[in-house]
Amino acid sequence: MITTQELIQIIKDMSEDDIDLVPDSSLVGGGSIIDSMGLVQICLALEERSQSDGFSFDWTSEKAMSSLNSIFKNPETLAQEYNRQLSAIHK
Amino acid sequence: MIIVTGGSSGLGKAITEDLRQKGENVVTISRSNDPVDKNHFSCDITNYQSLKQVYLHLSKCGDKISALVNCAGIASMNLAITTPPLTTERVIRTNLIGTIYVNQIFAPLLIKNKGGRIINFSTIAVHIGLKGESVYVASKAGVEGFSRVFAKELSPFNITVNCIAPGPIKTNLLKGISDEQIKKIVNNQTISQIMQPSAITEMVTLLLRDESRNITGQVINVGGV
Image 1 (cartoon, each protein chain N blue to C red):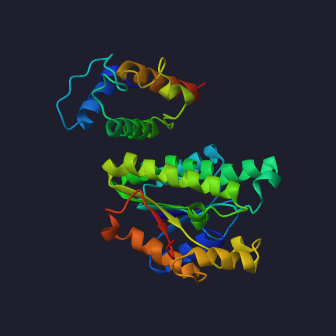
Image 2: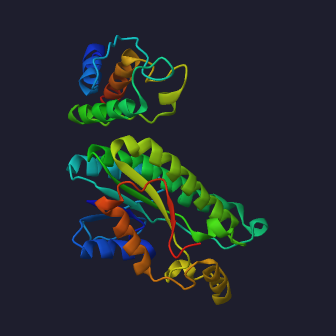
Image 3: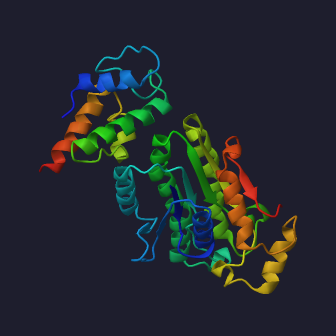
């Protein structure tokens, strides 16, 4: 499991600047404070964490970049997707 | 460690052997089985999930991947009108979609390495618009376009992406082409001679060198056009 706050902390730790992130801050699109390079780094950080959780986080689903339901919409949706994939392996 | 796709035959094999001779640790990916080579993965590059499994394996091993050389590809010599649909699909799937998959899936290993080189393969036929190779040219022109854009996307991670576009090289890929056709193609090159595989292995070596760190998004026609 990953909490939204944990995910926010991961993103903050990766960022060189002191960024202000809340659970519904945009991670993609015009209002995002994360650039494309940052987004790739978040994916890799989650993949690394997922391996210690016993699965491999997949950020390439068709849903990932959907404008309405993107898993990258904000830290909360990304944490939800991570936890969804984690729980799917235990089913 | 360097990943070479299509490393079991033709140019890929020549590149793999050359790199290993130079002391590089090379992992090969191709459809063929090689139970002896522990650094070989039998995998079709058009199969996204199979490639992903290879990625996860390499990722877990923790070896640093410094370069990716994509040689896997197939040729088709046909007039566009007489090309069967399945051939069209197979050529585009292998040469273009397969190359894109390999780039997408393995680039994160280079990002984790904090830099590296990606070398994709095109062909002189794209530049000269070679008659009878429209589908093959379409697939390789796609690879060139993809590589140019991917170079921009990966430049913040100190990764270069380039294409090598050879003319006729003495490999099995030339089997279906007549001597006359080969002569015509060669005459389009600045250096009008059939290249040996060493011309390509030398170019690969050159692009892998640290001194090539500022060459990216380029299509390099070996022999000139």
